[in-house]
Image (cartoon, rainbow, N blue to C red):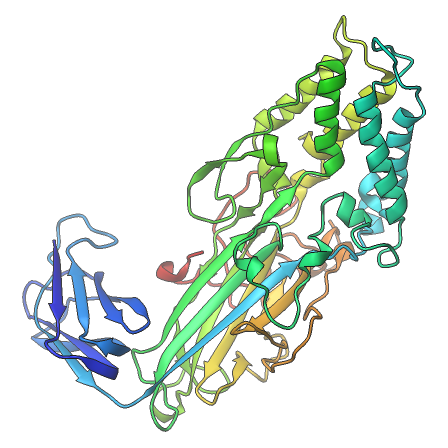
Length: 526
């Protein structure tokens, strides 16, 4: 059952909404009132139990029509054992102005990123992923072995290669050579991060104004987080109690399999009749942490969606201009804290055993009786399997990819400024993030500095550090991306405590790095 109250006159401006709670019949701690305001429907949860008949404020809002309030008998913990009280509603016009601030962090993997890993972390492993030169050599060697074979004229033979496969390797080999090994001295679109599809397109680099495509295209960024704070400020700048509100949102973007991988699948099918592996898979919390299981379209698109881990959000709080809780004349700001992020698409994909089995079987079919595939092509198939799809201790390094994350922690003040919490604390920041990738910060769509000042700049506020991101052990544990972060860990650790020992399918609740809090359940949303 739902009850609706509507005032019999229009309110144009700010007003406080009061609900009357009777002495008897008010039992639930989670009565959910929905208020139709000028800026959309706002929800307020009220604990109804108390002594005596009383009026309780559920907040102050901006209106441009007759206020409407809804209350349902359905509550978040509803068991049918407690009563919800339906009684009078009062609307009290007040003087004040509406303040709204949206702060957004966008993570962007630039093609100019140096992707050399931490030497101490890979010195004992024979992997092409240890540095740029190794990746370059691996790609050249693997593709050249196929290109060195003559082209088969008619039937396949172990001494020649069919034309489609040779063409695919020619395209890859050319891209590798044109890209070279230098992080920045290369043609646009031609770099190791580009041909590995680590990076976002150079055409999508953001500028001083947040591009609209970040809101519509999951291939243009890696992760993004947003906090929208709103409140009503009195004439003296004091935040009117109960008007403070915050909405949080976050998303983890898509990862793309390298072009040469998808091209190889298609070419080998055409040349040798070996069907590509079925790479479509089902997993939970892809792109958004919403609990839904989604089936991918990887076979067609080459996209492997990133996993969004559980976000952690704090309810809004009124503070002074240093970010400490305040009331009355000192309460001039509203605080928001939001921690979110996820993993690149390889990790959740490798958490689905079907994918490993499919690609292993695809590779194996090249060696079955009656199939004539040259050794160089079989080696290519093995390299693709080992690098991107093999699980287990000796499998792909992507099974242990650390999370990428962002933590927004700021106050929006009635004097028009955005400030960091606890301004005297050097470890406090409006934005903290993982070691990777580059981070861009915006206020109401315009570029912002880490101290809250506005600046029209196309430069990131934080530059990615791949070497630290790849570090698996250090004397100071904060220097690795694994384990829990804390107030002093900088870019190290992560909000979910994901460690090297965790499997690729790990997906647990998180904590803020700022205060190690599990957040407020109504605000742990993404």
